[in-house]
Length: 369
Picture (tube, helix red, strand yellow):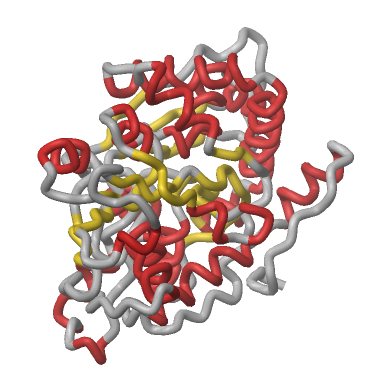
């Protein structure tokens, strides 16, 4: 997920544009995208909306399991017919946002913060959230020799992926609930917040440079595999233990011009999520197989199994939790209060769900109507 823009009252106006683009924290990847043609098109299939291709962007991360499994099992290609499902695997939020805004991709899976930032940066003109994908998968993991209880976190060094990213904001909000004071910008206070790329956090943890980390999967399970202990699952802080970690987002111009193609992608997403939930072990294997294809390396079982178990795949974008996450960032002084009205357009998703006999999902008052 991604970093929220800094507020001018913190004298960070000069860096706001940069901070706005710090996205999809949890992932901690670089900025390049890998092109992937996906599965073969079935003989005799017809094009959807007359398109040669629909360009889909996702990350090589388990919280993007809908994309990984749907791609691996061919759900998206099946729904699009002779229109190619063309994939771009991104390593960081800034490049995904830029690709969406420039028209290089049409639809993407991304975290709540990139969606909010992309919405705010374009003044509500470039994207819409059209569906959910995943919930959960974020934990506070600590060195059990140094931190034995939640109270012991005070005075310790805790890693988060990025300044202002979704996990950083969540940790700052939790620390404030404990009555601790932390300067959001410097990370100094009753707890020291160390902003550390997810790729290097396991090494920092093993070396003792940090006492714990508030991080997404699979980083959390990597720390546990190295002797860490889960002290808190972020899901426990949310109603029904659900909060958005990944959404499905579309470029507004593409939605207006090609609603049938968008509906086909949403149908595939709903079908994929249903298959994941009905076949959890097969889905986990498919996701790991696609991760290996995308990155060249599969996750070991002692990391994959607990990481997958903590993620819930859902069609519901959990819109109310996105608003709450933004409010946490405002309270931490990392975001000027955004106007999110219109960020959701769930009409096509609810059409698909109705055809499946499933209940409609809610936009928490942040929809287009």
